[in-house]
Every structure is written in structure tokens, then in C-alpha cells.
Image (cartoon, rainbow, N blue to C red; front, side):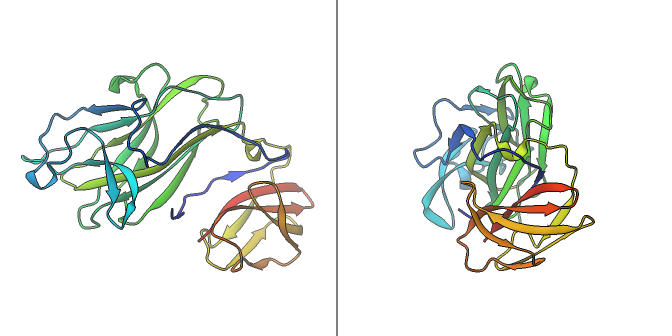
Length: 264
């Protein structure tokens, strides 16, 4: 899948390990453990009559081999969609809890918008009282997003996560690669409060690292913890790396910090 992402900053001091709570690519359809809620009661237009449920299994329009979860907001008569895709109950860990997903609209001229919501009690729409993310007029190209559930205050408790299509007269929304994990050591905060920037992110070749602190060394780290490259240069050529997610680890006179980057 493509990785075009909004990336968050994490400072870490532990070895690399995490526990997956949910890893769903919908290649076998939408699991029966998910809850599908048609909260608008509207009738899909005849051109999208296949949407007999709030969310259905649907091939990516740009890659027929890739199945996704999809909903529509194109109704007759026109209205506002309220179509919910809800995960099974997930019990979060003591730290390092995250949720990531991919999304795209079918048609850039009729983009769909959506909410990412959280409930701590059940799958009733009224129980989703916390909005984690607002996706406004999603692009027609796959984008990857990530939210830090620990920063939102949801450690050590069961939760339900929902993606709700909330669009006035759009067309089709696709969601893929839903991933929830816990105990991500990249999120364990050290006493260091070092801040630095990496750009461009995502990148296809070079990145530039800058910080107000004195940078002594920069490492590119794979997600299994392997240091692929160590340098003192502030501009780094990543063109030879495979596409995926990496960490930029910066050692400064104020401590060590890491950020995730996406290599396209």
C-alpha cells in the first residue's frame, strides 16, 4: 500500500517491540467482529445500489486485487451520510497505544469526509463521544494517518474505534489497513525534551534534519531496531532504501529523540 502520512513525534529509550491489537487489510472482506451501522437510513442512488449495508467489501478502483472497506454518501434524495465502521472491543496497554489507517475518496470532484471516533463503553453511536480525527474532503489518493491514543488519555482500558462517513452528497469512501497496537517503545518518553524537524516527510530521496540543539549524530533506524545508516550530515540520501516507515534518531547535547518518516 501507499504511505502518505501525517506523522507524529515520539521520543524513545527502549528496545523495539510492540503488540498488535488489530491488523485488518479487508482482503477477506469485512470481519464479522466489526459492527456496521447505517445511522442515516438514506437510500443509495441507483448508480451505487451495491451499498446494501453501511459498509461493504469493495475493490480499490485503482487496484482490483486490493479489497477495502467502503461506504457511500451518494443518496436519492440527497442527504448527509452517517455510516459507521466499528472495530471489535480492544483492550489498550499501559503505554504506547496507536491507531493508524488508510483512506481515499473515489472521485476528487465529490470527496467524502469522515470522523474517527472512540467509545469506552459499547458500539452505540451515542457512546462515541471523543473525536480523534476529522477527515475533511479526503483525497482520491491513498493517505495514511495515525493517532496517539495514549496522548488522548486512553491507556489501560477497553475501547471501540469507529470510522464514520459523514458527507453531504459525496460519492464513495474507501478505508484500508486499519492497525491498532500497544506498548510501542518508540512512544516511551525520556527526560529529554529535544525537538527537531525532518523534511520533506514523506520523501522519495533526501531528507534534511534540523534542531535548535547541537546535533552530534543522526541514525536511520528500521522498525526492527536495526541502525541502517549513521552520519553527522544534516542532509541524508535515502533513495536506496526500500519504501516503508523508518525512524530518524538524533543524538544532541540535550539528549536523544526519534521521529518516524515515510520513504515512498
